[in-house]
Image (cartoon, rainbow, N blue to C red; front, side):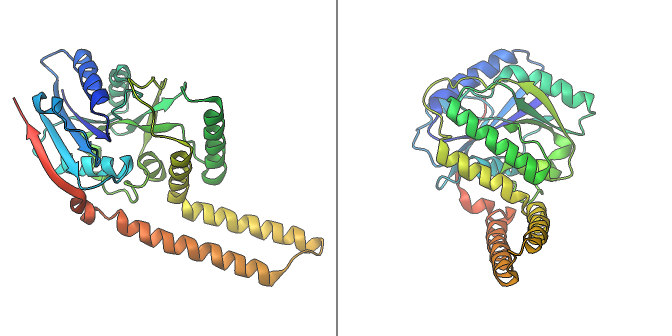
Length: 289
């Protein structure tokens, strides 16, 4: 079996080293070939340890583009490179994605005849109570506005036959998991606990959580816009019944909302065009022993 790991990283070389060692211990068999595509998301690390890792490609980005765009770049690179793999594994470098779930996820993929994207479904989290509260509020909002569940992160396993479909998904570099959920691809989940970071502090603060949540909701903008339209229509009938309805103000408000959605959606579509991915790459280094 051949496995390709796509790992975005930002100033996290120490944790990546620990993750690599843990993965190697998990797959000691010589019958399993491991390949690593590490995306250096504009960090300042020197990556001295990475130079000793066999079958590793290090993609250096010109500047920090965020983990979601970095994942898109990594998948695109792996697809076009000479790396031969059966499964692609997307995971973070900090240790919160535990390698012990890889084999159960591969087994799940095989049970689905490798026709489904397998996500690790988060069950236990390690953040503060307030952070968990906000995250649960976000999940409820996501469910209400999209009729979909959002209980997954980047940690996923994709069979090689699905990669070409994955890379074509719109807005993949905006929010990896939400874009796949929004697509028509089959999704299955393996229940997992979010592990503690090997070291350092998580970069997912309240500000990043807000923008990450906004991006996931924005991917479903058409469905949300339609839902909002019907809500406004419903409330308009109710307000009109009680004599509070103002057609002019309602029209102006709706026009403003849909104009903002139109402008932002076109801007994001340009940023996420796969033809622009190469413009982010500074250089690529490979090591093979």
